[in-house]
Amino acid sequence: MHSNYRELLQCARESHERNRSPVGIERRHVQLARLYSYAFRLHAIGAFHAVRQAWHAVPTGNSESAAWRLRGLETLEDLANQSMEPVPDDFRAVMITFYRYHRGLERVLDSLDRELNTSASADLLSLAGEFRRFMEAITGECGIHVASDREAPELASFLVPNLGIRIVPLVYGDHHSWNLAYLAGQHRDVPTHRHHDGVEIHLGYPPTHGWTILGSSRARVDEGYAMPIPPRTAHGWVNGSGEEHHVPFIFGSLRHGGWGVFLDVEPQPRPLEELRVTDRDRGEFCQMVYLEREIERARRTGSNLRKTLIPFSVTHRNGSGGLELSLTRILPAGFDYPRDTFRILAVVRGEAVVAVEGIERSVREHDHFGIPAGMTARMRQVGPEPLVVLDALIKGFSTAVDSTGSRR
Image 1 (cartoon, rainbow, N blue to C red):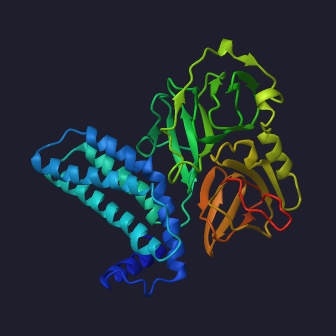
Image 2: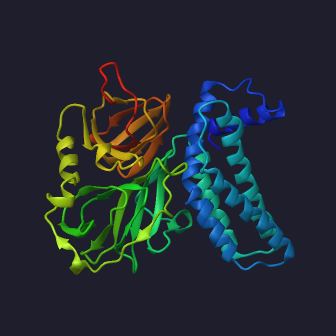
Image 3: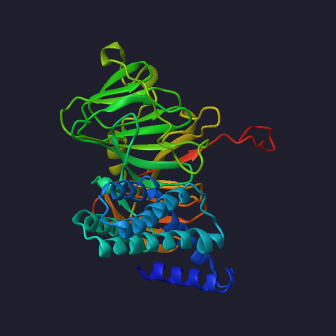
């Protein structure tokens, strides 16, 4: 455990020893509890889900090992269910949310160890080691959890029903997430599908060669892009390179409980030849962004720069909320992000030190992390490479009216 995690755990235990008294829980503890809880939350369709499936598939040795397994599997399901609940912004984040996560982890690891003691299994030993590694990537750090899109661990990912593609969750907020579609083996395309209440932004980084699909059209794409996708809109990707390809994407909906639900998927198979060929700057694709051009333009800028690439209004429909994608060029002097709803950040160029409520951690290209709602965050460039960062929020239209009578 990191010293921050150990301090927070001691605070939670003392609270329970005093019949769940909030006395002694300080603002620092609440902020730490929120950071750690959001880090655990990504494993709802990560390790909590994948390890449960893999554990269930390992042959049991005897009745005693089966009993310990049942205890562990039920706890993993409870942990995944807990990740659907909101993370509080007061003492309950320490006393309830964080502490339940920790007690659940203890129970799972204890169940794995006890089953191994009664029925030795190489598969189970490997499974236990991987689960511990995923959890210690959270408990062993300062509270700012960083996920990289350079890898796609099988025991921390999710196979999307009806599509057959593997999704790696990187960061989960309150109602949106940043993920990686890992296109390898036989599944090197994203089959055409749509979401009823979910909105998306697909991100393509070089090298990228193929067709992107939106609605009833297809466009040839041979350079970096960001493509917004409203609800109930068919979309997909046909890989024309013949090589493995990975598509980072942002997913969310204000109509879903807690976070983006990948079960909101309806396959929309259609032969590529039936789709209308459209220029990527026209028709359905007119809101697409030349992402790599924007990143390079920002990289060459000699001052702090902030730019909205895709406003939330592009994907917002009937209360779904809309994803807003922005880009920031940050100098060594640093940049302060505004306090807002949960913000997900991805470093696309350079290296940085990020400070969330005074807690610092180094991050670099390919790293992703989240800033919970209302928390202060500051980033500054370190090293010679210019620092460029993408970030995403999910927002909805407010019905409030200001003093001029205009809708805000």
